Length: 353
Image (cartoon, rainbow, N blue to C red; front, side, top):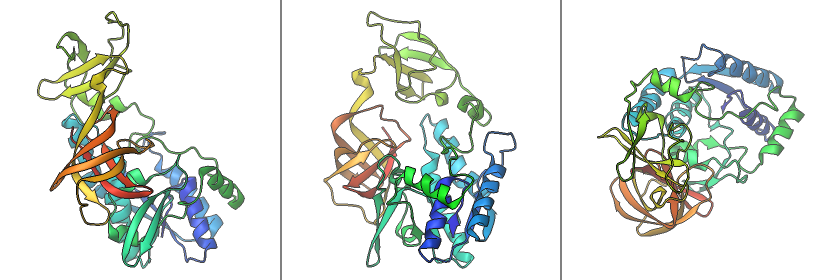
C-alpha cells in the first residue's frame, strides 16, 4: 500500500514497486479538514493528481481521513509547544503518529503486507532488526524527519527512492507520463500552506504582546507574541532602526516565557547565539534500546544541516546531555536533535535548552 500524496515522489515510488513485481495499491490520506480556502492545503487538487497517477499505473486508489487522529496526536501538540514558547516540528510527529502508525494500521487491516512512501531514506535489515539509513541523495535525505520510527514501522515499510536522486525521480515520472512530474515540492507545514504563519497561528492562540529587550535588559521595542518568533530570527522584529556602535542587525537569542520578553542581540556571530552543549528530552531510539554512554557520534539540530561531531552523555531516563565539538548556532527549544553513526540514524530527542 503506497501512500499517494499527489506529489511526484510517492507516484514514482508506486511505479518502481510495480516494476519490481509487487502487487501495489495506493492510499490517499487527508489529514486536515480546514482547507476549504484555495491555496492553503488543496487536498482536492492533490487527490486529483493521486487519482491520475493511479489510473496511469492501473492500480486501485483508496482514500481515508485521519483528520481527527491528526488533530489529537499532532496539532494539539503543535499548539501546546507554541504556548510554551517553543518551536515544534509537526512533520516529525506526523510521521510517527499518522504515516507510520495510523496509515500502517489501516493498510494492514486492508490486507497489505507493507506500506511504502516517497521518503528519501533507506532501511537495512539483519535478521529481525531494522536500521534506518540516510537517503543516498544528501540534498534530499529525510532521515531527520523519520528518527522517531520504531522496529514495527521499519519492518513493514519500504522506501523505493532511498537510493535515488531527485532529478532522476522527476525524469522517471516524465517517462511514466505522470501529470505531476514537474509539480513543485511541498514546503513548510501543510495545514498552514500559503497563509502567513502569524495569521494562521492567531486563529488558535491568543497573542500576548510584550517587551523586546537586549541581553543586558535594555528596552528596545514591543513584540506581538513570543509564538511568532524563533531563535536566530532576524527579520520581522520591528527594531531595525535601533543601532549601537556596531551597526549590526538584531537576532532573537531567547524567549523568556515567565516575563513574556523577547531577548535580542546584535550581530550574526554574537557569542550568545552559539552553544556547545544541548539538553535533550523525550528520547527515542530506533533499535528500541538506549545506547551506552558516553556515546561518540554525530548529530543534526535542524534538517539539511551537515552532521556535527558530538558526545552523548548523562543519559537519565528521557533526558540526555549533548556536547558538540563545534559550537552550534541558534539552538532552538522544541526542535529535534537527531543522532547518527555514519549513515545510520540512531534516533533523537527534543531540544530542551
